[in-house]
Image (cartoon, rainbow, N blue to C red; front, side, top):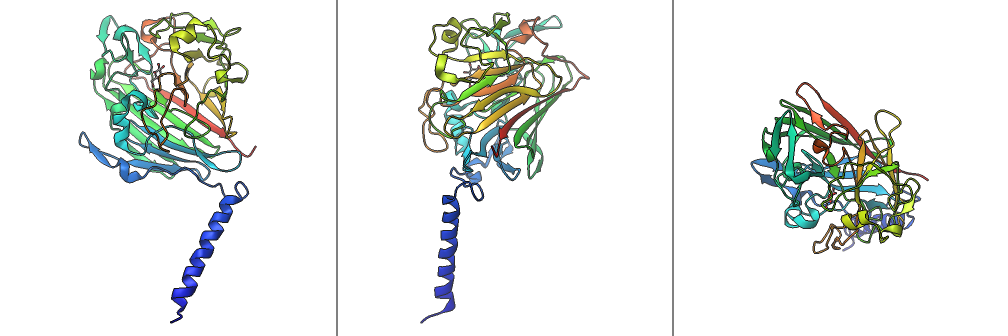
Amino acid sequence: MFTFKKCILPAAALLLLCSCQQSSTKNGQNKPMETAQMPNSDNFKATVNGKQVQLYTISNGQMKAAITNSGGRLVSLFVPDSSGKMVDVVLGYNHLKDYETYTKNGSYFGALIGRYGNRIAKGKFTLDGKTYSLPINNAPNSLHGGPKGFSTQVWDVVKTSPNSIELHYLSKDGEEGYPGNLNVNVTYTLTNDHALQIAYKATTDKATVLNLTNHSYFNLNGDGGTVNNHKLQLNASRFTPVDSTLIPTGKLEPVAGTPFDFTKPEIIGSRIDAKNQQLMYGKGYDHNFVLDTKVKGEHLAATVWGDKSGIEMQVYTDQPGIQFYGGNFMEGGDKGKSGSPYEKRTALCLETQHFPDSPNQPQFPTTTLKPGETFNSVTSYKFVMNK
Ligand code: BGC
């Protein structure tokens, strides 16, 4: 028997479905179409060391991000490409457990890094006459705060709003060999001017060393494919060359006339195979660039262009350096959010920072934080839209 419910409702549903599909074919003219999916938040629900882990989503209307308090990681960052299609521009996994499984490739994907980003030579430094020993996790050096650095810790969620999330971590005196109880607050905000802003704040009760950063792996074309054809510009006329263990030699050398000159936009892969000892040591780009800072506060440090997506990302920071790591040690073997493996150079990192090994290099800007002082720093990954 004919009924309104049986006939009209399915027809209406079909009409609705068609109109959605149509709006996605008119890509760019209507609302941005989303291709990749946000990871399922159920895959991130867990209790780790007695603390609740979850996936949080924030949005500013045009961009969306997913952040988990496990390692304070940025799991996804969706931005519209030049045709309005939503592209997830950071590497990561669909399940919390994958971050633990794929430690070789993925252990730092999107994570907050501390207490000291990058390397400290031989895991030793002296502060106020006392020598501290850190665990060696990147022989012969200590890397990214040690094997139990901030990227492996569950952060407390202090506050959330539709476009921001504030995390907190108390790194106890002696943790991973570092002195002082260090309270760190990090706030991720999707701002109205199309930026993912990361604001860091830290205080300590004993003198310590500190170098905080975020270790997102960007591929502006989305998931898969190398970043060798991305273009990069760095606001840096000098870099800190390294020894064979990737510890700075202490010199600040001009980039002019070398494959490290990104003062004008350059295709990342165009000089990567040049005969150059620094490139040999890093197996490609894995170096700290000294930012040409003319103003106090946040300034433009880097710009990257995705060759296929047309996405342009600008990095602003108040830090003195930026580590350009070209994904040379990525090995595949893992499966990322879209199911494709993360092979060598399928992402790049632009880690805003103080220079590596600063605690052992007095001529570098200091990384010492003393009781009574507050460390404050802001880095923004800003996307140029509506070109
Ligand atoms: C370092 C690389 C290291 C990578 C790990 C970068 O900050 O400079 O040498 O392999 O982090 O993800």
